[in-house]
Length: 382
Image (cartoon, rainbow, N blue to C red; front, top):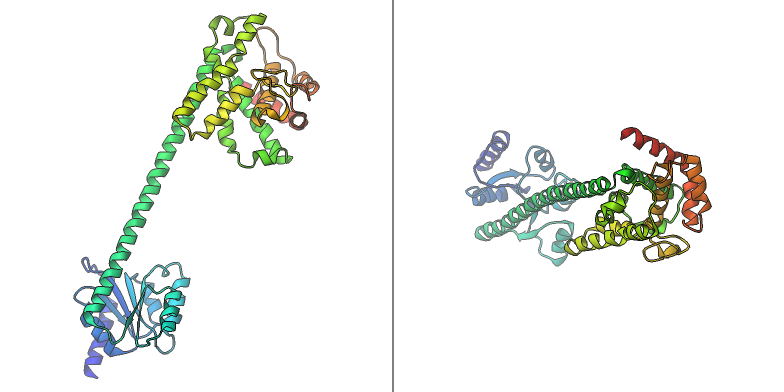
């Protein structure tokens, strides 16, 4: 009895004064058992290797866990007030304690008992009375696995952070590349300054309208809208291959010159295809290729370069056709002065079913006020 009182006093002092103190490299074990003899044996067996905290009931475990997180809990099954099964069920319900490994200590020997404990989340079973060398070895193995698990989680977290940082760098590089190439095209064709930014914003208005009015949502379902809008900036990329004498001609083009400038759709597609061969997973380049090659195709098949018609023309090509033509009509060009917004809308409406997808023209007519607002906004910004 005296030994038991001394043991309890020692454990109480340890819990009150030592649990928050740095105990070197020792890992912390909480041993929960209502039998004081088992607690003493556990303390004596484990004390030289681990920082051991002993508790004589499951109920006392939970206040303790608010003050310290052990590396492992040794838990007796048969205890009054709250048995080991109830304790582990409660541990696994709480986010703060569910990941603490639990090993059951039990004198019960049956498959059902072991199965129930493992089903509740215990990592192992140790029979009582336990062999000290076996207990130490089992704890060593489990704590090593837990340590390796934490290291792996730490490495994964760092890896995810590195991937996020790398992805951010790649996205920034991609955006810079897009902007630089778009500016290059625009500088090569100064007479249409602002065209790339305006068409990009017109596309945004049209795509927002498609969501609002539930138009072509099956085709739009898996589309990354940000990538599409960024990629649209390269729709005239092929103009960098057009002769300056044609590109900068301050007047209407001859038929031969027009045939030459029409090739910018083919040149743009080839340039982007060459980049895709070296970066095959770049979705934004796939979108850019569609814009470059198909924004001058017409619904009735009279467009270029391939003479596609109807739904043969990719959706983004059909959208860009509207944005591109509206901008050409509503801005000054060397061969004409700008039409008013109302006149530009009228001309586009008349070409529904000929140049343009009728469904998209119906949408265009619903969002023309927003299109006009964007045109004014970009003009003021520039």
